Length: 237
Image 1 (cartoon, rainbow, N blue to C red):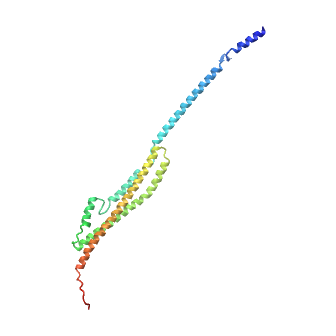
Image 2: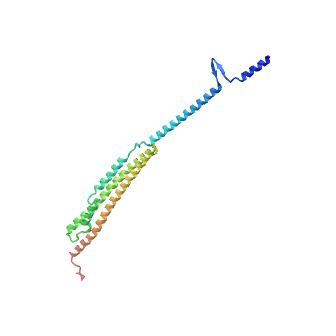
Image 3: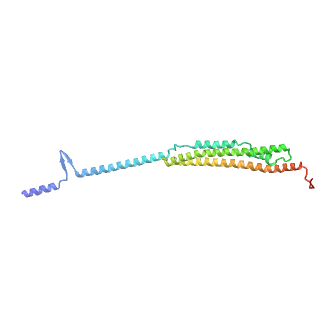
């Protein structure tokens, strides 16, 4: 009978759930494991949300950087330099860069030179044309000097813009640095155009002066020979 009671007790213990009681609190291992798993999943979801918020914050920061303006601005100095070169061209002496003025001056001083005028009139005309040539060369030298003076500013601007481009925080800064480099190139092309225009003007005035001087010299030679007695061959004493 004792053996029967022992077997019944073991059977009853085996059929009881795996629970323990501590101070009136029932401990269920399976329920605890489920709670731990749920908490882990919740923590993972929270971490995913935190990472998503961090990514969004980084994206907003990058977008803000892309919208930052370049702190360096050389547009105004470039415009001032172009304006200075333009003022030099506008200050051209005598025959300047006006089509109507050029046509009138060439008509009166070069194309229709009055070869039948007096000697003094012809001398005055030659002096006027010579002064036109001298003024043209002087203006060309001024424009060339201005272009040369801008070289140092171009060197400094290139260094500043290239440094700004390499350290650009975003796309907008890089684009603005590139645009300002293009503006610098445009200013250099403007200097080159002005220099070529001034030099070509001086050369054109000088060539026109020499061509007119040849025609006038032939007329003056004819007059000189006409006032001298003709040479008649004969015996000498």
